[in-house]
Every structure is written in structure tokens, then in C-alpha cells.
Image (cartoon, rainbow, N blue to C red; front, side, top):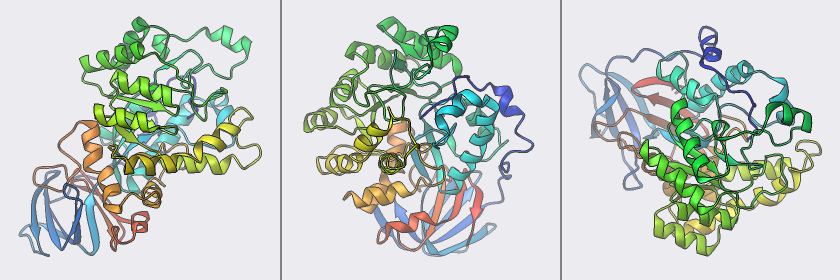
Length: 436
């Protein structure tokens, strides 16, 4: 994603609260959700009718059958399938791709991106995604805080803040600048998320801690949308990756690695990252290494399909980007199919912000097209996503878990397209959408 060069301060978002997206409703009285079917994320099976009782933001009870619960408000979902709230492990709420993306980073102010981010967050929640991992964007930590305070509506956010890159790498904020502007700004360093040594690597992680990040994102190879020629060249040494991972562990962080090229992926896995994002040129050797190390794969098929389609449009991407988008984007779905067949652990992510926010669920459809069973795709966005995040209080519909619940009409196991029409969204026991 193309990022604005200036960080968005907390003061920027504070001015939005009165006029922004609808604020979170006050949690209601105990609720009984009477579900026609229930997706059990732990087993990957679709169960019959169940009643879910929600109290104080948590799941209090799960009972077979459509039952009345004394003192609880009943919600009739008898024609629907209830699933745990979905998690998208790769989004960028601070922006959204368009033909103007590359110029907007120079023309717009942080407040413009912050206003947009509030709307994008609300669309994401309405699409059934009660949690996201935002992998790169200075707006997202502040948006996370506003959502947690109930000031605006949106998913629960694990925010990376500024991605960590090397000089000229995919997340170097000065890529594409002319000489005069580059000299004016000066070479970015660890504070700006650009490293060139082991010491820089440690400092960059500590800076993200200082800024309040929840997770660390590195750009282990070139990228599709960055203003640079290579989309797959390795951009970190193994020792640099290891320094990032080891320092991240000091602060309880996990590390996600954007990676398209084989060598960059190998270095990232050997360095100990938690997940590989995109993974376009993932070879059997890399797959074997990931299985040995327990590394997760987040395919982001949606982003690949989107950029490959847009590469056909004259003027949508700069000339340096267009061939990368056409070549790399078209391959990701095939890679996801191969990774699944070879037993690589797969979790759900879209890279949304490349495509339009709110369309995240289409990734389920693309995963199924790649030969991944619908139940496995749903697990990837629920229990598997929780495992990637390292949390135990979400991802399944079980007593004591967060009351994050989504309902779609029909049977998404039989027809995955059902996920594109979300009728009901509950997050932490609060109903945000009820279009029944």
C-alpha cells in the first residue's frame, strides 16, 4: 500500500469523533441468539440449531436447539448460520487503492486519511470482520484507540504502525520522491522504520513499541505497489530478521513478513517470523521450511486478483508498478492452492486497502476457488486467525469467549457465496448490524 509520508497524530482523530461513523451502541440486556445452524470453528463442522446466550459482552451459554432464555432478548436467526466473528489478518485501514493513490500521499494531509479510515473501519465491521490486523499505517494505532474507547465503530485492531523496511525497500517512505524532496527530508532511519543493520533493526522495533504498536510488520522482499522496480528481491539479511524477531519477543510482539520472492521468504522463515504474507513465489523448499518452523501463511488472494485486473487499465498504476501487478498478482491464488495441498498452515487475510474496504469476505470465495474447503476457509478467519494473533478469547463460539458473532443466511459450507451477504454482526456482545 502507498502510505502518506506524514504520521497522523492522535489530535487528528480526536477532531473526527463528533461527526464520524456511528459510535458504538451501549451493550444491551442479555441476548439469546436463536441460530438455525452453528459453525463449530474448532471441529470445522456445521452443527444444527443452537441458542447462544450473551451476557456482559461474553458468551454465557451455548445450547442445542432453539430455546427461550429467561430474562434475555431473543434474536431470531433461525434461517441463518452463526459463526464466530471473522478476523482479517492483513488490512490497511489508512488508505484504499485508486488511480490517484500515488499523488494523494503528497497532496493530502493526515486528517484526510484519518477521516477516510473511520469510514473504512465501519465498512469492515459491517462486512462481518470483528477483528483485524492492520499491517502498516500510521493512522491505525490511533483508530484502534478510538474504537476501543467507543468513540467510533470498527473492528478490534492489532496495529503494526509503520512497517519496517530497508533503504529503497517496499516500505521506504521516500521511494519515488525527486532528489530535491529527498534531500529536504533526509535519509529515513529506524525512527521512520528504515533499517540497514542489526542495531537499526533493534531500534526500529523499540520505536514501534514507543509508538504503541501491537505487532511488527517487515517487508522482507520488494512489493507490487511500491514505486520501485523489483517486486520480489530479498531486502533483509537473516541476521537482520532475527534481530527484529528477537527484539519483538522482548515486548510480546509477533512479526508478520510481507514477502513475494523465494529467497526473501526463506530468510524471513529462518529468522523466525510468525507469518508470511502474500508468498507469491513460494517454492516446495519454502513450504517444507514453513512446516518445520510452524510458520503461518496468509495468502491475500484478493489483493493479487485486484492488482492483476487493474494492471490491464491504462494509467491506473505508474509504469514501474504495472508489470509487477500483472505478473505477481495473478499468481497468488495458485500459490494458495499449492500451499494448502502441501499442508502449510493457512490463515485469512486480504490486504484490503489494496481493494475496497468492506469487500473482505470475497477472499473466502477465492480461497474456495483455489481448492480450499469452505470449512477450512472459515476456520482460517476464526480459530486459526486467533492462533496467529496469540489470543485465546476469540475465534470460537464457546462459553467464556468474546461474544463476536456473525450470521449469514443459508449454508456457507454448501455455498460459500453466502458470506457476501452478512445479516447480523455482534462484537463484544453489542449488535452493530441486524438486517434480518
